[in-house]
Image (cartoon, rainbow, N blue to C red; front, side):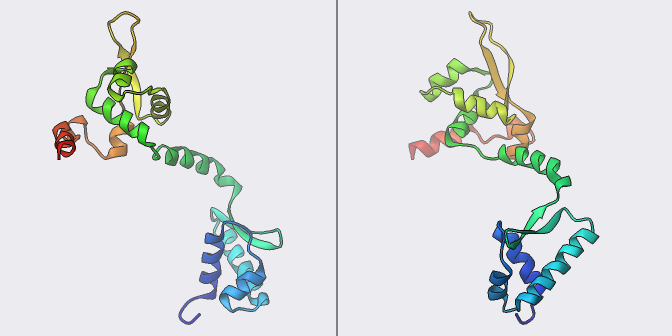
Length: 176
């Protein structure tokens, strides 16, 4: 462990483990004695506590585990909700592209263009706030019209819809 702090090594091992790690395992991985491992873990835990960190080291199931402090739970939940909206399935991406280029568009028009039922993709995109209902079409049944949101622009780093690549660029790729 030349030129590397034993404390830093133990910290990174606890960070990546994601589950309790025994002093014995840490000892084998670092070459430190189990007593030195326990002292180092104790020092780390004290440092986190002293600086009011968002993480802590807990002794769990005959091992040590790095955890978030209970006070951080609200922020973690909020972050997870934001982070989950970044994951789009292929059908959701396809549906979103059609809505972005054809808006305002009804669900029936969307399904006709896709050749598939888009219920699941539309619900997912609505839940992620990437699309919204922007009105109703003046036809029998008055179906909802869908369009993109400000979150859509943020997600793709666009200033406005005119920043979307021209649809002709995609048509040329298909022909090639």
